[in-house]
Each structure stands twice: as C-alpha cells, then as structure tokens.
Length: 128
Image (cartoon, rainbow, N blue to C red; front, side, top):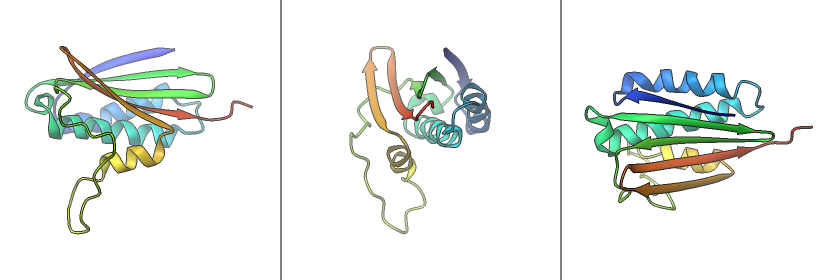
C-alpha cells in the first residue's frame, strides 16, 4: 500500500505529518521509528529548502510485508544533501536530525530531479 499527503511548509505541520505516518504504519513493530524519521525529514526540508518559506512538502509512505519506506519530497535542488551526515559539535542546538534518521533506518537515500528532491528511509522487520 502506498499513500502520500502534501503539507504547507510550516513547522506546525510536523506533528500532523507524524500522525499521518503513525496511521499508515500502525501495524508495524517499528511504528515509533517511522514517526520519528518522518518528523526529522520534514523538519530538515522546512529548515533547508524553499519548501519552508511558504512552499510545501509531501510525505509519502509505502508499506509492504516486513518493510516501510518513509519519504519527504520538497522543492530543494539536492545540493544540501550529504550521503554521510555531519556530526555537530556538542554545543550546537541543531544538526542531529539526519544522524537520527541514519541511526534508525535500515536504508537511507536521496533522489533529485527538476521537480525537487526526495529524501527517504526504509525500515524492515520480520513479519513472522
């Protein structure tokens, strides 16, 4: 099953996007990981792309047996993405979102084209 939902590019939409993901992966044993990943990816899009300046982000969720993919599409051009997240200094008040995503997800990736960019993370589990 696959679902997508667009949201206005404002921080007040982060809990709404998180609730959307929670509802879509409600039967997954990794539901809390999926929620946190979605929140971090949305915040990252809002903070680092034009989507956070009056634009929008789209949250996509795909669930198959034993797997979920959480993706966030925004209007960024892909230049800010780093395949390995930077480690912030201890006194930095931000910069840990992608570290959280990388630590929770089994796979992380990024796609960019003329329509924007999509950051995604996959979670797997045993369906026994």
